Figure 1 (cartoon, chains in turn cyan, yellow):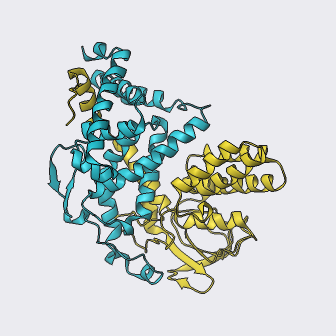
Figure 2 (figure 1 turned 90 degrees about the horizontal axis):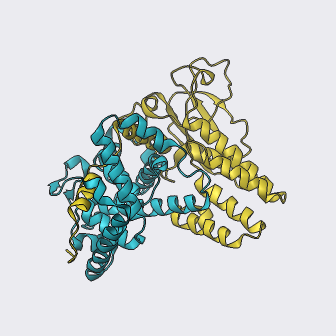
Figure 3 (figure 1 turned 90 degrees about the vertical axis):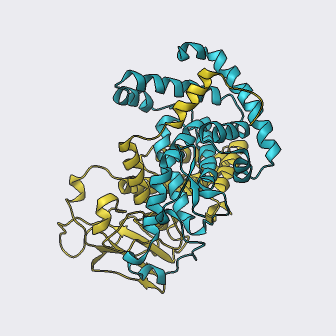
Length: 214
Length: 237
């Protein structure tokens, strides 16, 4: 239970003890509310979960089609849901990332649906503003442009394939891990990944990705 | 895995994506929002009990607002709220906005839960106040906090919640009075708020309004979203 992958790292590391949620805590009763907060480990555990996985949640929301202007709110939503279900979290070998990713998938789906229904304010201008504020260096600007192109290309891939591609190519999860996390057959992971790679290359070629690479 | 090899340019983009993440400011902001929304459990340590109510995440302030919304129709049996009240109270009674404490202020808040039959740890209650708009049976026990009066503070998520509750209430009454367009307008206004906690209620009213306008497909979509996004909500059942 303690061997959970850390986002942004290729290898797997042992999760700090403080990060390991208690196995299947019972739902808190009213009596539990009177417990001295100093004795309640959940706030600390949840904070550790947040610190460890906020980057993972953030970038996957972005890669799954959440607008930049929405991503803060949606990341918050993911962790609010995670908090609500924290007591139900039981590591069945998938790890915290797989559990969080399920929430990310639902939240991202809702965000996309909302944008489809309310397209009048496509990005609220926030993204442009952030570019100005944050991209003070050339490389940061180039990286942002790369991510924009990547997201545009990913948007052309259907969500099932995109999900597998993101988990493998960006989160560096293995095929068996992805199959387990998404509850799909291993061969489906391979086939979706194969098609997604082709589609990604095609989409990027249409954008003229070569010019960015130079 | 997979026989298709990605080009070096694509690989470079994917590598850039691996390093993507929120800025420190965004990280802190999101955490502040989470902490506020869940009623304080998310704080590393608090001077008071973090009320992780049995209803879970969206927490106390939302329950209170829900009571406001449902009015006489539903009796909220148990409501939990974190109330922030300015230091400069005038008299024993004062009108409070719903204030789910956030960030550092959580440590100074006091949590109170008042239900039909159960009362859970009310540390240092100083006065009883009623949310002006509330018509439900929800009772709020206000308690001490620190800081300046609300009027001197910038808008905070809890202010959005009060506004959001008002808009949803307007939407509900508009639907009931046969004016679904106004209802939809109110829902859209609610969604433009900086902080939202009444998503299920908004979706439920939106579905009713859309149905009243004959936009069946969109109404079904709203219902689907409600069920997918808030499966534990009573409104989704």
